[in-house]
Image 1 (tube, rainbow, N blue to C red):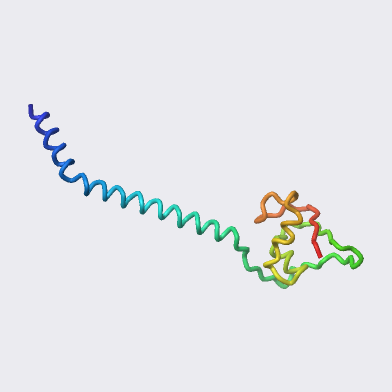
Image 2 (image 1 turned 90 degrees about the vertical axis):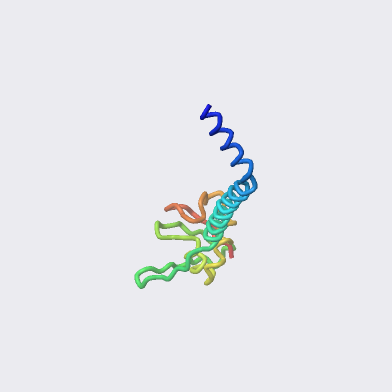
Length: 123
């Protein structure tokens, strides 16, 4: 009998506070969803942004000389990034997408270049 009374009182309590529970659960869901959306937005923004790169004194990239060709070929090294190649060939790191678009089939991940891959560098 005590168990039945307890259950009855509990159900009355839940019924009386149904709106409060719904509001609290809704706020938790909105907070978690908002946090997930913000986290995903930051990841997408960071993946689009290429890092600012400063060349060290010992490191230089030289474009391969071939004035008669419309496109140039660059064999990648372990230190190469699309950003650094864009700086070396175009003088502007933001033009890394030009190199990427011309070599999509050879670059599975634009954030990391494999060593010894021949990339086409459009004029």
